[in-house]
Image 1 (tube, rainbow, N blue to C red):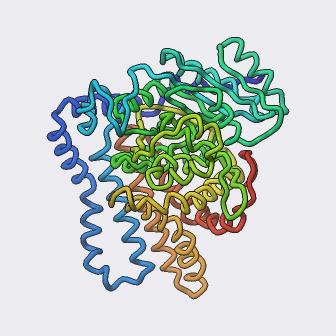
Image 2: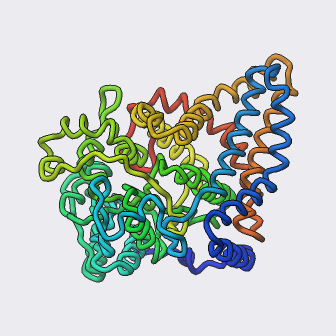
Length: 499
């Protein structure tokens, strides 16, 4: 079998490693400070760093009532970005960090079981699952990283489902099964990723169920850190790891995506996690409590939208079942009452929190060609549209801050193609080229803000320069994929190569 030429991510020499280490030492010093003082220090530092943006927004706010809607859009986007950065850097704490105190809301439950949120034991049973289809060239690296991650937890098991591969993948998996002691399930026919994972869940009875992707590589301590977060805070029903690009060195396009991934997790997910409402526990490392998700696995596998099966293995939808079961859970369980996942044990609907563990590192292959990137983005946008009709129906109940983050993001995504058309097509067609120029300047400004946030987290790493490129790419080109995704919503199979 052909092996990767690149070294595992953990062994790569990162740019600016010395600067990152210095930043880490500074962060550890800050953590030793009492929580109230630490929060105050962070707020001051972050406010000073964001001061140029705050002054710009303050000046523009005076003109806001007189601005045209299309110009006001830029103000709102910049204000939203500034607010998200402030929340992510002042409120977020890594829930797996044992140097930090156990959350106040959970302290009173030490040594006893809460009627609302039962405690996990110190060493809960863990099953790490992956579904595989035609991945002969790269699956070994993934499975070996899963085995290394499981080895850090007593009694953790690795479960692999081969979804009727036709390229020799199953022979590789059999060899790894015998060598590593993993469980291998060979399906006689292709059923799709969701059904394959649900079939794997049927054979495990672990208190924690974790998923990863067949194109992913986990850090050895990634799974342990996610499980530790669930143990420390019993209100967590699910947590997401932190993902970067495994093939970041392949070219410009992959480096751009790598920096973008960092911001989407470090800032966007951190902001949502500050309120316990991460809306997408991402597939590269998604870790769930059994009692938060097991009753809803048949609904996930058989998800239908607009009268047809929705075949994409959407991470957002499975996360939505955890976030919204207090309001939607009973109806879903009644619909699938005959399923063994529901009839065997009926878990109470709870208002779970969903978090993000920044220290749980995982790497995934990102699209290396522009064509594959477009296909990936179409799949993601279809999942976004489908999930909007589920999660969007209850997110306002989770509180003002989570609602603002969620619906603000929805409005930004929905408005992006309209803004692109207005500024880049309609404007120049009517002779207003200045409008297009100003629009692009605003897009680049936003990208630079995200890039500077990356640089603050990674001192000495010059890759921050790629972030404005992603902003331009998203606003000028990828935004158009939303209406296309809407028109082709029913077209979808489990493969990274189609949309």
